[in-house]
Length: 242
View 1 (spheres, rainbow, N blue to C red):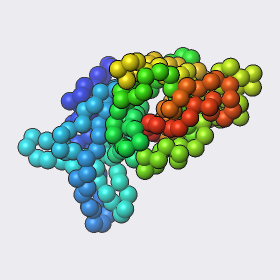
View 2: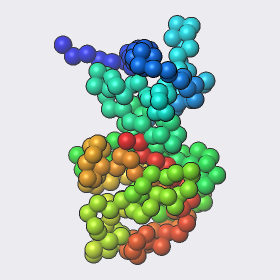
View 3: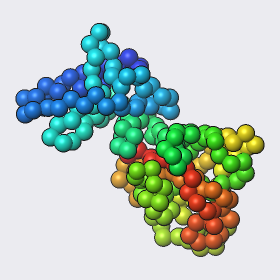
């Protein structure tokens, strides 16, 4: 008999996991509860609670636990029971359930959009929405490293596991992280559905996008100049959970 899990089941399992882990940790030694807000994204939808806690029949339950200096998100422990993939992005303290969800910020750290990643037969579909950008074409890539402290330079170079040159128009290209230019309308908004061909969401896979980052550049990517298509400064980006 096939079991279908609803949001009620997922939330209930999360709470049970939190309570169960708290009991185990308590038996092992002192446990510090962290009431820092944790973001929750389920199949591309923001399900974050307003105060960073869940109301379990009148009892507030923390979404995260800190034990011996390590932050634990209990729902990871029961992802197999739920039958769904669970991803964690530590910079924003964000849990993605179902599909990886990326929060895109500008240089000031303000959230200006998001991206949702979905596996397909050809690779990974990236659905991206953003606002507050300059109208026109912008280089858009998957970069090797996660972004730290909202410094886009920490993202390193393009994700290039196969040792190629840059650009869709390069005879020696292209990087696996090379995406088509992002087209921004006159109102400063962009919406795109792009397939990263050959990429995957397999944890630990050589071509997996998990744990890397998305970066948007100030100028158009010319599609051939190594290493980044003369696409200019890095103006926005976000980390792909793993």
